[in-house]
Length: 310
Image 1 (cartoon, rainbow, N blue to C red):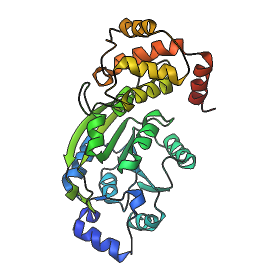
Image 2 (cartoon, rainbow, N blue to C red):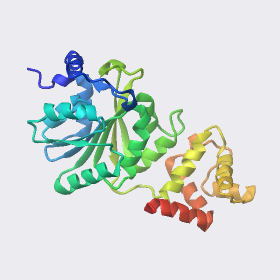
Image 3 (cartoon, rainbow, N blue to C red):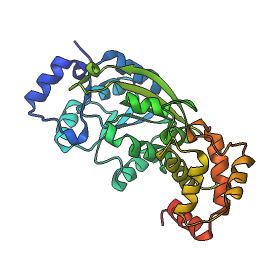
Image 4 (cartoon, helix red, strand yellow):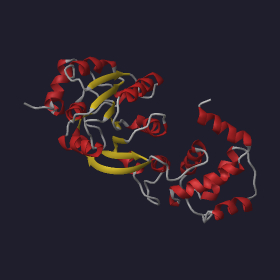
């Protein structure tokens, strides 16, 4: 008997037909059907029976079958109400499974997860198969949110995975690279063809292991300001950094002469003519911290209010 029936493509197709389930494009539903993919995810997650796992977007439960078999407690967050009855029925006899109905980005869902963490010891791990359109918002939530995870394993579009794990100076190096690597160590674990999913997407997917730092190795004076500056720099990545700094200062109506601007850059051994993609995360942080110091108090206060959620 197959212990993981939902991993079988033919079973899955019949299962969806039997229950009259129509996949919704707006949720980017592509269900995993590749044994090697499941094994890669579980190896990256390094699951122990004491772990508490938040599975984001279980779909019909193909990966969930593997997670509960690992012995850990699984809390699956599913937004699609049409799939709730299937998940409840399929895992009805599994005491280590609980369905959380809702959107992972909504406060009510976050409150539920917070209560889960209060009542369960062990390491906290998040595992997700994310459609392209929602990857960045969920990564921001997982890395910047109040809920802290020991380990995050995400299956995502290969192009996005390449950006998250990119090295300085490469074509893939981007604002998303700097954002994720500011909060965590990121490792590419494997890449899989469209045939690893049903229905097959048009692109390949990659599994990325994200290990959040217990203590950030680099500290920005204001994280939101830092990320805003980096994003502005990469909006036009072929611009020289001196022009990116000028654009930032102009955005907040701060006027300084070009000599002072270049002096700030040279203070951090940055050539004014270098492009953003050539600067390391550490260099970006040091530069952003210097720019923060010359920002008017009104600008600083607006970022500080955002940081406090006011």
